Length: 214
Image 1 (tube, rainbow, N blue to C red):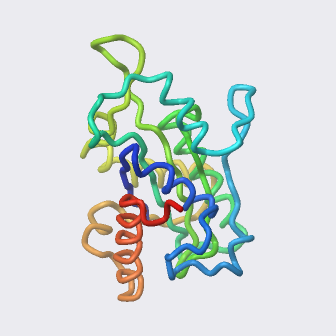
Image 2 (image 1 turned 90 degrees about the horizontal axis):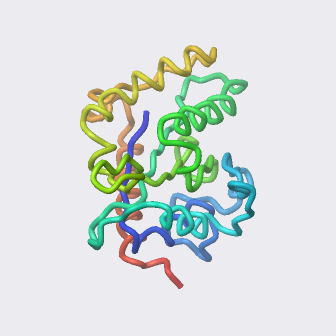
Image 3 (image 1 turned 120 degrees about the horizontal axis):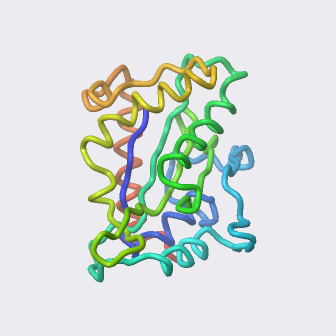
């Protein structure tokens, strides 16, 4: 099961700090700090031969190469959250995350990946949180531009789950993913999981409002 979120530039620093767990005393009650050392990154800090000390510094570097509309509501960062299937055998769990990361890099471009973390420290199932800059060709000016609207279309979302399922099948990973229609209807999630998702959405809104910027 996967879902996508979109963020404006003003929210990006806090979002990325939250992903890499660099926020002191986070208010998200779903995080168990004793398990945070189990989290791991799937992206490299070295990009194009340069070492970027933070995900945010690479985000800023990437934006300089792209055309960005000068509106405050422009979504300059997107993030997929892909949850580990409950029935996936333990020996396939790490390959599931690594291949999901590879799949996302193929779609959005490795150069546009800002961060990719496997979170093992939150209540419920472990998941990968992959953030990227939504880049499309700039047909008017040439080069590339940021446009989540043009990239993340309804058709793109409709095809996402089947494409990921096919990719994982080809890699020999026996993961059964929920399709978009089932996910929208709540699927087979428990009440606790649905409540946790609502809490996560509220937590994201708090981050976007700058609650965690200290």
